[in-house]
View 1: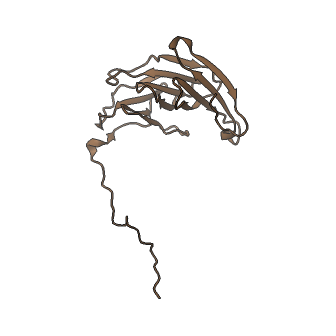
View 2: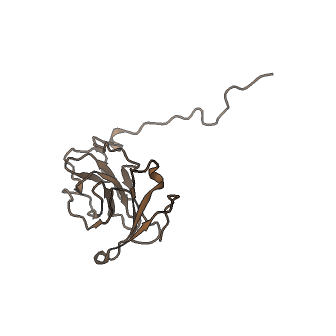
View 3: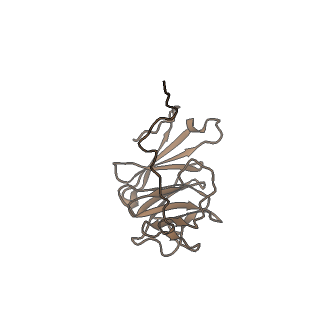
Length: 192
């Protein structure tokens, strides 16, 4: 009677191949902030990464076609006075990105068609109204120009259970409006 110790798999002889250096991003100073964020966002045109910056928060937006070694002087998007905690591209417009920061603000940015050629310091709109740092951003997947921003309370032992939400109706540019919603105890986000 024979026993199989190792389960047979049809993938046991499959090995991955490392990506070449010219197809990777190199020399990017990713932020050292500890936060529940991906520190990056990608869409069909650009990849954005939160980077270390002195004197406030910044993130870098690179065209997907630009790979390899990234120069230290590559232009960044910098307008926050505190570290950037989350960034999110708009699912309906590839050139629009939102950023949330420790300075209690959300900024909406418009990236030029070819990418950044100089540092971007002036947002399209600055949304203020949170009393604490903005930790999570999410665009509505089907409704155009609706952004949800969340702040996390660090005073509660269970920070995930205590959230305050702010929904931003972001269309048209001249008529930005907000709705403040107190979260239920279960911490589940709901679109309104």
